[in-house]
Structures are given as structure tokens and as C-alpha cells.
Amino acid sequence: MSDDKELIQEAVSKAEFPEKLSVLFEPKRYKVLYGGRGGAKSWGIARALLIIAAMKQQRILCAREFMTSMKDSVHKLLSDQIEALGLNGFYEITQSSIRGKNGSEFAFVGLKNNVANVKSFEGIDICWVEEAQTVSKLSWNVLIPTIRKEKSEIWVSFNPELETDETYQRFVANPPENSVVTKINYYDNPWFPETLKIEMESLKNRDPEAYRTVWEGMCRLTVDGAIFA
Image 1 (cartoon, rainbow, N blue to C red):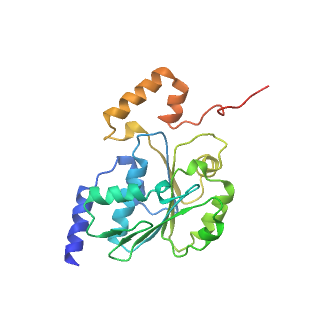
Image 2: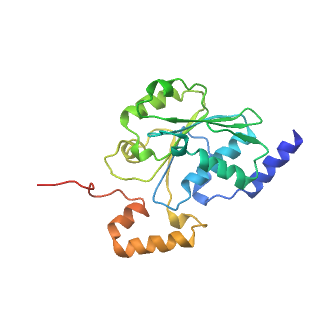
Image 3: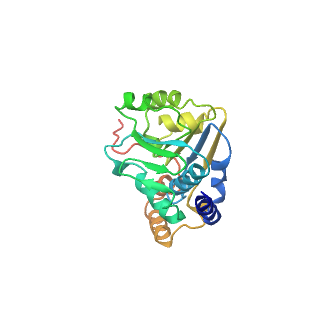
């Protein structure tokens, strides 16, 4: 047991986050992170969840609108962060779940056309909805009442597409009570890699409107492929 504590303390001591991600450790019903690529939203959330679940038993549901296989989920991202944090000795990684020695568990689910399965999850402490820009109104209406444990939280991360999208309207344009909404972009990430910087600057010069959507996290002004009379 003391070995596990030392392992966790070491992981906590070496875990670094962009400053804006400090909101992940504040108690809120809804924690919403949105913005362009390169802001470290996903790996920051994965890292925070692994640390929280190592320090206290948690049941965590990782959801997204479309998930035809585990390859579509954040399972690989979490596994990589377990390795990066040196928590291999604490977490057991299987093909369909991740479990901690203290009873913490990560489960994975696709929301679309999977209503019965979503409703079957009980006792969830934290639900992380990744790539949430594609989540429909129906999926939100099914998922949110399912996450009903006292002091449970819903974490939402996404790159905005259209201002009219359900997720943008629900959490950014009209954020719910007891929520923290944070926009985070590549310039908020002190570890933004040089390779992505080159790609970002190339798109900025070639297509400024696409740059604003992809890297600045601004909603697109037009729909791809739309025909207007």
C-alpha cells in the first residue's frame, strides 16, 4: 500500500498542465474545455482523470457520439498517459477497460444508437465526453440524467464547428448553472510542438478562415458543401 502511495505521489509531482487546465481540479458539475487544435485539452483531461482516480476510488465513463470499436475511444490516450506518469504498476489495462488497484474503473461507450447501454451505467463519478461537437441533442438528453450520483461531474471537450451545433449552444452560448467554460488554444500550451507550429502557420497563410476554425477554435461561418440560391 505504501508503494502505491509513493507511486501516486511521484506521478502527481511530475504531472504538468497548461495553466488554464487548473479548472479541472475545481468542483463543478460541468467542466467545458473547447478551442482549436494543439491546446492539450485531451491529454490534459486524461492525465487529470488518471491522477484523480488514483488518489480516490472513482468510476469514470468516457463517452463520445460515435464509437464502433475501442480504437475510436480515448482508451489509447489514457494508456499512453499511464505510461507517461509512471502509473503502470497501479493501473491494469485490458482491451475494454482500465482499472486501478483502489477500485477505480474507466469504462467506454458510444452514445449514438446505444441508448439502452448508456442508461445502464450507474454510480458514475465523472463522465468525460470527448469530441463533443458531434453529440446530438437526443444523446445529451439521455446522458445527462444518467450521470446523477451526488457530486458527479460531466467533463466536455471539443473543437467547435458550427455555432448552431447542439453542444456549442448548450455549453458555450448558454452555459448551464454550476459550470466552468474555458477556451484553450495552442498558444495556451507551453509544450506546443514545433511540427504543429509549422502546420499552423502554413494553414494561416494559405486559408485564414480555416485557420481560425482549426487553430483558434472559432466556429465556421459556412457549411462545407452547402449550396445557396
